[in-house]
Image (cartoon, rainbow, N blue to C red; front, side, top):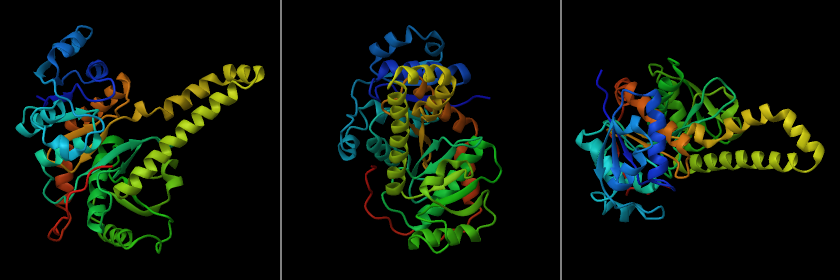
Length: 352
């Protein structure tokens, strides 16, 4: 089977070309059927490819030396969509020259460019930012929205649930992923009108490929008894950063404790296998790759500070979504739901 190639914004991310190329080369070891379009400064890319012949033989370079700044406003970046590595990677998806794009660059700019170039799928009002989160269960969970839409109505939340469930089926293999709405309590009477209305709609829609299980509180997200957590981008972004901060806090606290005395250092040596496992589980590089889901094309956001391993995981997520036909799955699920005419959208909001 001929698979579409993946466009890599080689200039995006904190370290740019070196890490992006190294990560793509790592990913290709497990996805050797894929080809790549590497977008960025040709001289720097060619120099980085010298250490990765396996990637070089599967890649084409699209030269571009203009880069979207990390602190650049999305409205400014949009004006340079035709000249920047990020914009050209997305344009490759629009033109059909690539099946997906991966970038570690400015999140707001990436969302704005992706939405303008690819547009939302029929039946979807707004795209969402979805990512995999670690849990105590057998599988990661899918959480969305993580910052693309600061406020959402019930219709948006229902659409997010449908898209998140389709993503989860690819990741977990579950026929009907367990879906919950993030709320301040699990009682049926808790939450905003939007949450209440979305919950009612999801309970009524028994033909969807998911199992709706009501609400979940933020402290229960990672217990392993939910596959998809749905929320608006404002709450989702806060929850995500709180979880990342808690993970760093635990890691720093353990490090400080183990270095506090000779006895603690000996204890560290004895418990090292357990602490290594904990560090691996909490390392965001092992869960890297957030998807702008709901567009007519696959766009994946790699964390700006990701290592080569983190970039490899983002590229691997991209490859899997193409292999498993994410967009087609979402379209099939949407066809099962009788949706009302889409209301007029307010002015577009910049990503958090």
